[in-house]
Image (tube, rainbow, N blue to C red; front, side, top):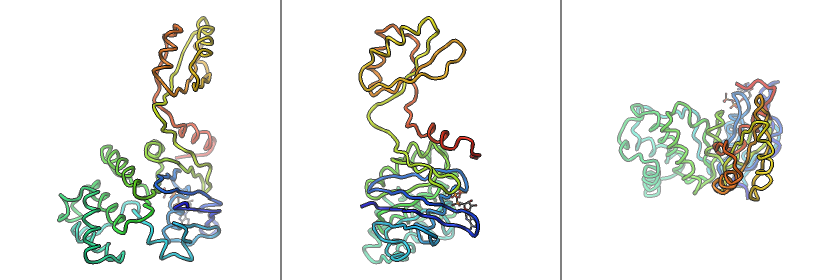
Length: 308
Ligand SMILES: Nc1ncnc2c1ncn2[C@@H]1O[C@H](COP(=O)(O)OP(=O)(O)OP(=O)(O)O)[C@@H](O)[C@H]1O
């Protein structure tokens, strides 16, 4: 059973569209990204999921529980890390976690155990006694995630979690989310495509409140892309080399620049493909960073639309 199931969800703000006819699922241990520019409907979906907003039309279930009919029980399955997580600056980290754990109904040894486990996972030990207001942004983010994990949720929801983080903190967060997905499912929003591509298993692309597609990020093996360039005189040699490539390779001719023709190859085994191309006497072969196809897909789907 899907941990999140959104079916035909629409929500208006007066005459203004928030989201329209959105459907997607998040499976167990899956990281799903909601990707879209500002105003595309990401926060609206998260608010409905977490019970802050009523859906207009459609059904949203968490762990099989309807977020309207079984709102309380559904919310108990979710850990929520809002954007710019509002934390209590005057509280110490351990006091805050104690307070949040009690709000979640934990007490006694179960509460202490949950706090210790969350602090351990988020490496909060060194700042447990520190005032939240004095922490760096990266540490505050970790405290916000720790409070969301206290009740061992089935689903962790994070709204724009990388906002304001530096590159090192962003990398740490990515590793952390992958680690957390061993225990729960993760739904994360971002308007930054490269981030989603690195962390998510699937990405739901939203624009103007509509879901354009859900894209699976390919991470299998050591797949890579190569580019071959050749002038007109070399074209027959390239054609012969492409015909002799190992199975599993796909080749696509790209728009030529001047007299230079260019092919993009998706190859499952880069070394084998490079060896075959070298044996065919092709010198101008360039290795490209592996692509999941998300960027091209996003550009194609949003072509002609103003995306900021
Ligand atoms: N309270 C509100 N009243 C009126 N319109 C709203 C309200 N909240 C959101 N909207 C509109 O609904 C649409 C979707 O907004 P939403 O905040 O869900 O998008 P978003 O993708 O989360 O954007 P952001 O990244 O800026 O938070 C936008 O056009 C927005 O202007």
